[in-house]
Image 1 (cartoon, rainbow, N blue to C red):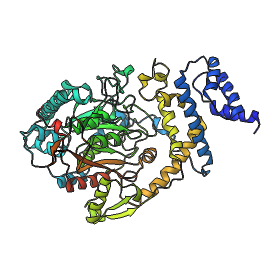
Image 2: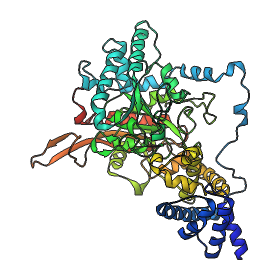
Image 3: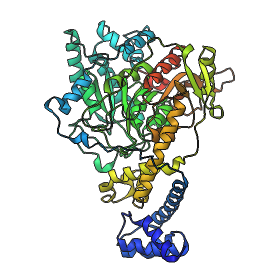
Image 4: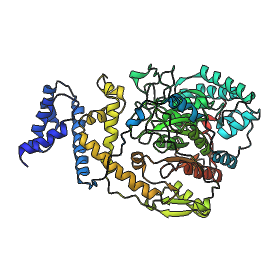
Length: 587
């Protein structure tokens, strides 16, 4: 290749550069064409033309990331993409057409909220059955779930006001340890609880969530309260548009306790004030970015919470905090009013201590709203007669953990059909991550250009800078390859009802398939100085116990199968203990 043509190649790779000018791009392209690579010295030589300043550390990181990005582009160019394969995106101009009077988006939100829960859910709730709970015992109440609390509210054993006050007191008592609350909405919560009690007494029943307290991840907008996205520049920002999921929970009569912590711009468990902690081990962060939602639910500080996931932000903290976390199928729940990280990857889902609770919440928040064009209406229907003997369970032989093996053995002994599966590995998943990189950098472009330090962007600084160099062709080709990944993944998942375990977190977030973290049983876990139940054996060695966790995955819109299997496992192998001992004291 001639120096001239090689320079054109490098120029093409740099044309989308957001740092500096065309002149800067040309200088780098010329130098790169002579050596075949971009180096820190080249960036240093060219930056005066671009009128920018980068630290030595930023230059080194940028060079490494650009080299990796070029390698990913080469992988995509080597992939044989059929001429008939389009990108994994849809152009939907009709969504923005003028609505007829009866298509008003606010009416759509209300109508969907008012739907009766599918008849399968009460059946499953009856199968779960409320445990015998002492409704005078605050700890037992704190550990209970939606079905149990809903029954108690309707039989006069409990009021929403008492339940709400109990959780508010627990939040105030334990938040200094967990750092999971950004904004406590106490006045709103008490007002909603009193209204719920009044309506239930008068016979106005909005459904199973009526009077049930919950918490919102702090990227879910609920004016007039701040929605901070976990970032210092936004700590006082009130976002004007009520999120659809919050609107639907309001309509269902749920009681919002507060805004729960989120890692800065939806990454990690470190936000603008603190690091959120894992209630089973308070020496450890809760993981993220649904950090506060999983921490609060795990400690028994609310009945349920909402989280979001783009690349593990429900699954990871749900595992860490040992709670049930359901990441729904992409397109099941509207993201309107929630912070965007990646338009083609973001999902909103429920977090709870009980499997059936995740299903109940999902049944309320799902469906079109006239505001998020990616959402479709699909039924959330369970098998009329769920039977483990008719269950087809996929598994990957080489990726079985101890907890997954226990579930495998239990399901197999109970009559489920166990089917070995394997996902093709022809498509380089890491090369498809440019979608997340570019979409997140575009979403936060104004912040990138206004902040004084990387600290204001959390862990995102290097990724945002790298994304300024991404080529449009790379992005589109990655989306075409993503179409192939979606198709091949769905083909495998259709062979079974659920998949047990598996190293598929990146894959299924790229494809939009649903996953659920399930807690069950009990296991001994590593000790720490504080925060986990302990007893002593004969040798005096401390033993620490917590629920086990596994992950289940399903085909598109197979969310109900996940809940059904999770509920079965929870009933067959109950969690012990239900709460960490540190949080079993009375607030």
